[in-house]
Length: 205
Image (cartoon, rainbow, N blue to C red; front, top):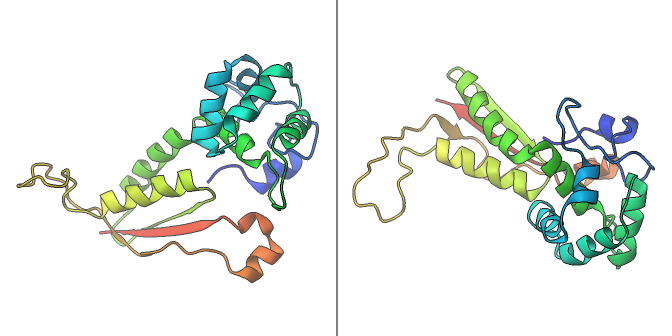
């Protein structure tokens, strides 16, 4: 799920905070909303909400305030440097702009809604015994995948406490991975971008 290493390394769309690329972040160039629109046009409160809810960054308000005060911001490197100034690393090996870039990219591409739709369509296309395997790279994606698979693996999805089932829901999959498969230390050493990956698998019944 999400942005590929090829896009990070080669495409000048503003996904990477290591280069001075235009703030775009669109997967689909036909859509209107860009990262520059969010960074330069959103109200401070809207921007803070995006960073907090889609990036899960506790420094969201501080970052949003700094962005608004330093507008216009035109490149990914300019944005990353600003975030690092107001939210320094403090010993972490993860760049402090990582969560903000994630949040803006998700908002630009409406990724969470797209994921929900893709999961529904994927299961509908599976034949009996076919498997759905999903690798997620952050907790928002993983939560959606986990909850979707659990729901599809349940014969009843009525609210807890409902005395009699009225949903008529039937399980469509069985869970193969009770816990997500995560990369080994050796894999992370050779591919640091795999460090947050989680693989979940379900099988059509």
